[in-house]
Amino acid sequence: VTEGPGADRSEALGALHRVFGYDAFRGEQEAIIEHVVAGGDALVLMPTGGGKSLCYQIPALVRPGTGVVVSPLIALMQDQVDALRALGVRAGFINSTQDFDERRTVEAEFLAGELDLLYLAPERLRVDATLDLLSRGKISVFAIDEAHCVSQWGHDFRPDYLNLSLLGERWPDVPRIALTATATRATHQEITQRLNLPEARHFVASFDRPNIQYRIVPKADPRKQLLAFLREEHAGDAGIVYCLSRNSVDRTAEFLTANGIAAVPYHAGLDAATRARHQSRFLREDGLVVVATIAFGMGIDKPDVRFVAHLDLPKSIEGYYQETGRAGRDGLPSTAWMAYGLNDVVQQRKLIQSGEGDEAFRRRAASHLDAMLALCETVRCRRGQLLAYFGQDATEEGCGNCDTCLTPPETWDGTVAAQKVLSTVVRLQRERGQKFGTVQIVDILLGKRTAKVIQFDHDQLSVFGIGDDLAEGEWRGVVRQLLAQGLLAVEGEYGTLVLTEASGEVLRREREVPLRKEPKRPTTARAAGRG
Ligand code: ADP
Ligand code: ZN
Image (cartoon, rainbow, N blue to C red; front, side, top):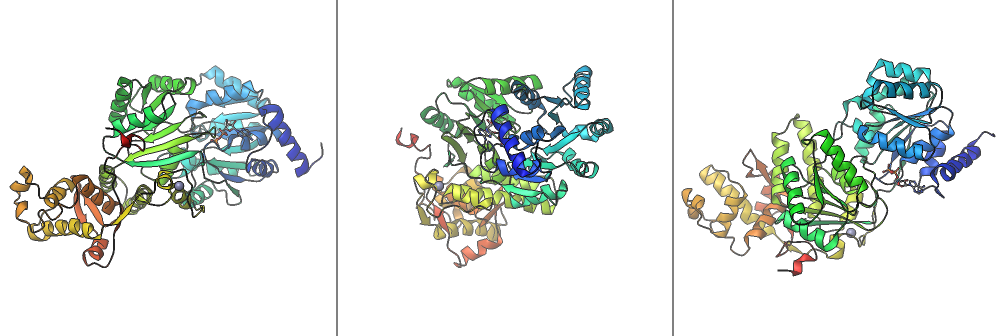
């Protein structure tokens, strides 16, 4: 065997053909594999479905020794290992689901140099016995999968990942490759710093998923809207529906089932056996819908997920991108559909305010939410906005495969409407020392003499009835957009509306407020024509 990159390349290509049965590398796979085979560290940022696994599996096959893969996805290890074994790769795993004998067998194989790949859960590396075991064998490469789990921001944080910098200290000569599908600049930096990978070469793939159509519709009756969307566009398709709470997961799954759609719930409140059963049904059956909290999905390798629907707003664009990215891994047309409304904004703002964490954490959470809201309210191409968030340029003319490109939303000058809302909030506070939520503000604007309006004498306010030019839904849309733009804020457990610093600019007529027009009958694109 001759040394040098040429030899590595043909060996890598040989493994691709012989073991995996593929004709060619995709995207940056070849460059990544070549770099790691030559002993370099790498940080790989590639969207879900991009083909990250081969980036460490092939180096593990080509270099002498065993490739050690650190992965938090214990539930999937058995499947991953079985799939590799079916291809003739000598793979094994060590995790808490095994009994003593099974683990002993894998350990013996590793020590005898009979394993190409060994999967480990990160918590294993806390145990000295595991580190001793690893020191007694020969390691070809360390792969740290789902590397964003080292980031304290984001819902996938695993404290054990912080420990992984020790791999570089104890095995300085073994190349390390960290992989993730989450990829803001801040996350890259956090990964390189916390995993201590200063020399790692960064491979950043395009984050565009051209086969996914992005759509965000105004929320009216979300379950019915979802049902219409599924019936009209995804009858019989497999997909994932995300909800914020366990309760709403259960109710949505029941609702879909009652309406003839095969759906199962998935959340952390179900026992492990039920969760495992629902997950494996989703992987094996055709056309099953999983209704889930964000607890579901990481590492799920199902190529033909045709849609991902959100009934509640994700906390960040990272979360939205990762969740929607589970659709269409096979490259075929798929839909990312979300229903979004005023209550989402109020609820998320309240969660941040009443949640844990210090002031800095809250500010950060708020800026993540702001970016997500900007995506919901944009009148420009959604894909362009999404890619821009990940630091990637998009075409000026739009993608042609998102709702705003397909049916550009109309905008209107909402400056006067915004002033009406804001001055109602001001009047209540200045003249009465009162704070109220959206419902009361809108009732006052519309001049509705509800019991609560009478009770507080709000029909005596000078602003009472000044908003009869718009309908109730339109006012809620104005409030939602003002909240999204930071021109209005919510406070306290009742979500009362209060002014922000920027509100003053609108009230003093120093600033215009362009708004998106609310559709008259908010349903899915094609359902709009129905009764
Ligand atoms: P990721 O981990 O980035 O989400 P995977 O490694 O699971 O993606 O790969 C996604 C799918 O693409 C898998 O079914 C995999 O077998 C396939 N794949 C990866 N690389 C290639 C390639 N070079 N040629 C053909 N198929 C590939
Ligand atoms: Zn677009």
